[in-house]
Image (cartoon, rainbow, N blue to C red; front, side):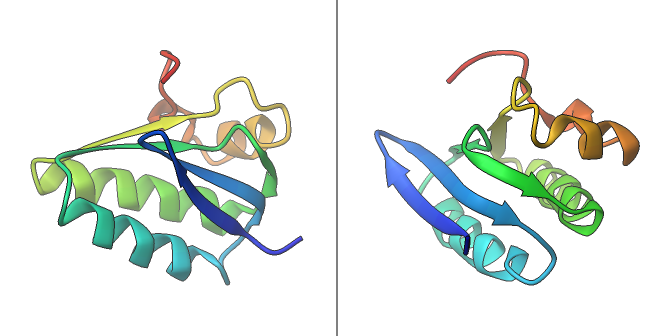
Length: 100
């Protein structure tokens, strides 16, 4: 399934599989949203999986957002489809403990 990005009720929700090839689309979407908002919520709850490169790119996106004095809250800690990869790449710290 191709990656789908939907903005619903102030939350950017992702559907499908997140990989290195479609991270550019997500990055462009987030960059556009950051121009309008100081705080963004990205939900990985409906992602079917992600690869190691995508996990590292999410971490880089998270760090860049913080460096620009913006807030990127990434939810999806409970998603069992992504938890193993996030732990393997040691990027699970970017996932929020709180629900949006």
